[in-house]
Structure formats: C-alpha cells, structure tokens
Length: 304
Length: 336
Figure 1 (tube, one colour):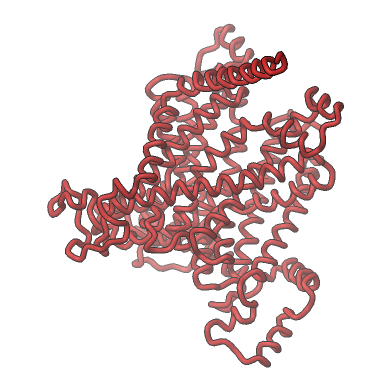
Figure 2 (figure 1 turned 180 degrees about the vertical axis):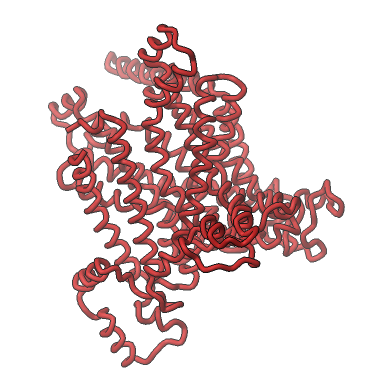
C-alpha cells in the first residue's frame, strides 16, 4: 500500500517536473514573437496538408482544357474558379500548391527522422567508444562534409536515379554528418560528469548508458538542429526538383512546379511566383521556430 | 603557426583520400559498367566490350584500379569527357574562372552589405533598423535562390528591361579570353561598351548568389558584435571616455571579426552549391552549370572529375581560412 503511494507520488513529481520544464520552455519560447508567428503559420501549413482533400477546389492533376495559363482572379481574364490562376496545361495553381504542402512536410519529416536516427547512433558510438571507432566515423563524416551539400545530393541522385524518394535519401545522407558531430560533441561533454560515473559504478550496461543515461541530456542541440534541417531539407528537395532531379512531373511538389513554370516566366508571372512564395514562407516559418527553439533550449545562447 | 598547419594537414590529407575514394567509387556505382556508359544507347558487341574493358583496365581488381586512378590524378589526368573527348581537367580550368568571377563578386557584395548591417544592428539593438536587418537576414537565409533569380529576371529583365537574362557578355562582343575573367578581359579588349556589358550580365547572378552568404554574414556579425560589446574591456574603454567610433572601430570590431572571418570562409561550399542553381538559371557558363549539364548528358568522367576538383578547392580554401584564423587569433595559435 505504502509502496503504491510512494510510486504515485514519484509519478506525480515526475509529471509536475515535466510540466515545469515545459512551462519554462514556453515562457522563453513565447518571448520571441517571431517564433510564435512561425509556429502558428507552420501549424496552418500542417492543417492544410492534412485536409488538402477538403480545402483544394480542384484535383492537383485535373486539366481544364478551357483555361490554359489563366491569370489570378484579380487580373483581367482571371476568374474565381481558379483563384491563383492556372498553369500551362490548365491545372489549378492553388490546388497544386495545397497538395504540394503534403510533399514538403513529408520530405522534411522523413529526411529529419532518417538523418537524426542514423546521425545520433553514429555520434553516440563515436563519442562513447572513442578510439578507432571514433576516428573512422569522424573521418567518413569529414569526407561527406568536404563536398558542397547540394552537389553531393545531385550526384547521389544521379547514381540512384531521379525520384522523390531518392532525393530524400540523398538529402538525408548529406545532412547526417551535422547530427553525428553534434551528438558526439554533446556525448563527450556528458561522459565525464558525475551522474554518468555513478551509473557506470552501479553497473549499468553500455547500451542503457548510451541511450537512456546520456542521450536525453544531449537532446537540446539536436532538437534545434532538427528544426533547422527540416527547413533546409525542404529547400534542397525543392532545388533538386527544380533541377529535374527530385520529384517528377506531374507531382505537385513546389520545386518541380517551378521547373515546369520556368519557360513561362516572362508570360505568366503567377505560375512562377506562387510556388516560390509557398516554399519561402514555409521555410521562413520553420526557421523562425528554430530560432525560438534555440533561444529556449540552448542555455549557452539564452538571452541574458 | 607551422604546427597548426601540420595539424590541419593531418586531418586534410586523409579526408582528401576519402574524397578521391568517393569520386572513384561514384562511377562504379552507376547502373551498368563504364564501358557501356561510354557506348551509350548504341551498345556494343560482347567481344568489343571485353576488349574495351581490358583497354581501360576495368577487368583488373578494384584496388589496382584505384591505385592507377590515384597515379593518373598525381599527373593531373582526370580522364576525358565522353561528350567533347577533351581532358576533364582542361574543361574544368576553362570554365572555372567564370565561377570564380561570379563567386568573388557575390562574396564581396555579401561582405560589403552584411558586415555594416550586422555592426549597425548590434549597436542599435532592439531598434527598428535591427529588426529590419534581422527579419531581412532570416528571409534571405530561407530563400529558395532559384526562385529568387527567376523573380529578379521577371522584374529587371522582363518588366523594366534593365539587365540581360543570360550569359556573361553580349553576343556583339567577341575577344580571345586572356585571364578568363570577363570583367578584366573586356577591359583589356579595348572594345567600347564591352566592360559595361560584362557588368550588366554580372549584376543579377551576383545578387542571387550573394543572398544566402549575405544573410549568414549579417547574422553572425551581429551576434559576434553583441557578444564583444558585453565584454568588460569594452566597458572599460567606454568608461575611459573613448568615443563610440573608437570603441566600436578599435576595440570591438577587431575581436568580433574573428568568428565572422570563419563564417565567411565557410561560405565557399555554400557558394559552389549556390552556383549550381544560379548558373543554371542565368545560363552562366561556369562549373555549376557544367556539372548539372554533365549529369544530364551522362558525361560521368566529367562529373567524377568535377566532384573531385570542387571538393579539393573547398578544402584548400577552408585550410587557408583556418590558417588566417590562427594568424588573427593568438588563442588558437598557441593551443598545443
């Protein structure tokens, strides 16, 4: 009985501890107005992506043969049926943008999860085992970092063949060294601390030491990096799409839409302008959020 | 200083071998073998295929192939382009000045605007100017530059008609390249208007390529300045009654520049990545466009050589920046 109560109390203490942590985090985060605006915008994009089927006025690939390159509604020749106009083969630009948000968020999520998981495991191994393991892992990462990221991604896609999935794999490979370096640095900082020595002393196993004892204390820089690489994954995937090495037409991915629109830039400004606005605002919102996260999570950079 | 150089080289040399290994493996990871790649869609008979494999040494064990690849590298032989049949190194060297010219203009533009913007933003922290610079910098940092380039073309070339859309110089001018830098060559040619034409072709690509470095430099300068402005010695300098110009110019700027120079150095890789997109949009005949074209033309020896050369250039510039960093920052120079 008393044990149960003690357990319950421990649980409550843990809960309220987490709540306090979250409150502290939120008070720092909400101080940054840009970060809050970025977060709200990002959630709007997420909602748009989830409910694309209900919001989009048309399908992303339906062609209206009576409306090629129709301008947006406020221009002469535009109509409400296509609020942001149509592209060269008569598809509704707004609907394509709405469906495109799914691809961008999907790319961001997959790239960040893949590079985060592999990067953290490699970084933990390098920082924890040191010695040869460390040298081999870090040298390989140095080699990856020696190439300009977009160039390496392009070449990887050339090997794998152009498609959205391969573009995501390439971008994940290119981004992963940053996680390895961050994790390794954080692990090196933590392993000498008393709580790790204590855990070692009571005989905690290596895997548990790595993933349960040390890793949670290295999370702050990783979360910030995840936010920043979410946005650069979207940018890089759009760039690959633009170069014809990412998502292939008729996928309504924003970069690919720009590539298709390129030849009409001097005739139909809207087919070029809106996909870019979508990329820019989404990436900007995530970067604003990332800045806020950094201010709130990283004590070294916390504003005094 | 020498020990710093040796230490850096100790990391750089194994990394460079890693890079050569990546470039070497690249061509072997491609679907099909190198000889079939060269044959293209025509294909070839079995005997001819085996013969070619032997001629190029593709039938030997991999490590032997790698060693002979390294041997060729030492002699400056990066193979021949499948399309033009010319040596890859020669092609690279012909196009390289165009990229260097564009990148130099971009980085100079980024420094000229980014440094003062960061310094002023830091000294007037919280002002409207500060907010504008920081918002602008974050927007620039988030910019899909391939779209930004298209927008500028619509505005300045399409609507206003001020700048040309593509290329390095108007087709009216032709002269033999001397330095490969169009700005210098056009002056040397003595042709009227050639220089202005070269400048007008450079403006938009430079702005596009400068966007991200500009944003990074402005942000870094501001945060470095803020850090130094909070130091005790700056307060002492102020307390001594030094004017703000002297405090900022002499005491703060010099120390704030240390991290900023590193960040500027790190932009070399960013510039190359940006050059791929910028050169493609503006049909700028440089390395970036050549790499993209080579990938699409399946000219893999060129891709392989370009990959290696670009990585080498980035590594060398980073080494120079590291040494410069050691030169201006005694703390680094004297640690072990």
